Length: 237
Ligand code: G3P
Ligand code: MG
Image (cartoon, rainbow, N blue to C red):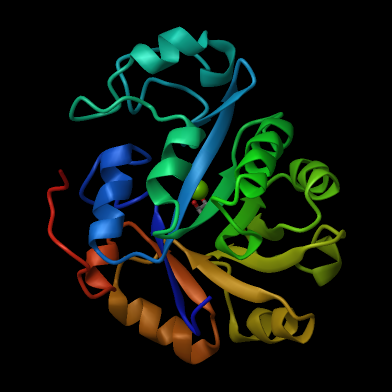
C-alpha cells in the first residue's frame, strides 16, 4: 500500500450508481489503486450491495439476504446496472486494483472466504491486494479463522474508547474510522499497536490533507477523480 491510500468508496459512488460494475470501472478509470465495496450473502452467494434493504437503491423491496438470488439479480441498481456478484467484481478488478471487501451482511465470512480461497489458488489474486473489514467483530473473527493470511480492518462509527475494544486475532491490519471519530490521539495509539488508520468518507481533498498531516494512512472517497491522476478515459467500454 502507498504511504497514503485512496480507496474508491463503493467504486465512484459520487458520480455513478454505487457498488455497480459501472461504478468500479469509473474508479479504475480515475486511477484508483484500491476499491472498497460492501457484501451481503444471498442464498450463500456474495453479492455487492450496501444496504440491508433493497428499496433505497432499487425498485425492489425486502431484506436483500432473505430474497431469492434470481430476484435480486433481476433488479436495476441504477442506469440499467444490476447488483453484481462479488465474483464479477473480482474479475473486473483483478490485476488492476486492490479490494477492500466490507463484510456488511450476516454470514458473509464463509462464502467470501470460499470465493477468495478459490481466487488465491487460481493465482488471480494475492493476499496483499486484499483487505477484509467489518463493523461486526464476530464476522471478522470467523473470517480470520478461515483465512488467517488475509489482512483485516476493524470498522468503527465512534472512536473505540479503549484499544482493547479492537477485536483480537490474527491479521488485524487497520482501523477504519468515521471521520468524526478520528483524532491525533487515536492515530498515535493505533500506530503504537502497529495498526494503520483509514478514514471514511472523505470527499474534500482539503480534509484529506488535514487527515494526512494528522498521520492518517488513507481515506475512503466517493469521488476518486478529485484525489487521483486520471488513468484513462470514461465512460468505459
Ligand atoms: O468501509 C468504509 C465505509 O464504507 C463504512 O461505512 O456504511 O459506507 O459501508 P459504509
Ligand atoms: Mg462500506
